[in-house]
Length: 207
Image (cartoon, rainbow, N blue to C red):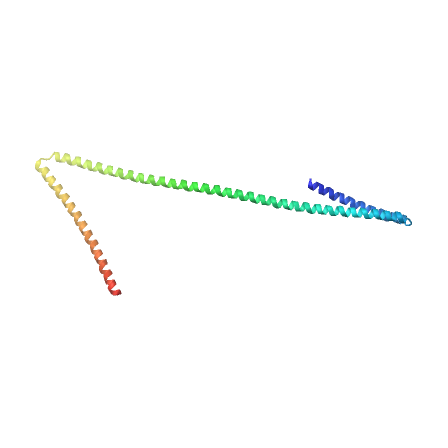
């Protein structure tokens, strides 16, 4: 409605300006024909001046309305732009919050999956160890069964000889293990003593 009113005001101003120009032309024409009639010429001059003043006033009012409407349009555009910027900022912030929540959920899910996979690996390792122990026990059981069957077929002297051999073998193994432990302890002690001697020598040299 504001734009239509502005256009109508402009058209009206142009029409009035045209009328004023026509009146001015008519007055010039009438002045030539009625050069001897001062009163008529005065009246026509006043009419012309009034028409010109009215046209100028309408043009000034129209310009004022145009400037006011331009200012209102600019203010409306600024307000609309600010509203759009605010809406975009709000939506961007909302999207960032949603993205952050999704990322947190994703991180939590990944941590849970890693925990589940770690538990599965540990369970698989335990199951593998249990299978290995079971196989070892089965092997030992088979060996004992075979040994029992072999001993059962022996007489007393043969059984005593086998038992003595087992004791000797076990003692030999225990002795070998003890010797290895003693050697390891001796090596550790030698290393420790060597480090102490080197440290003491360094201190003496430094002093």
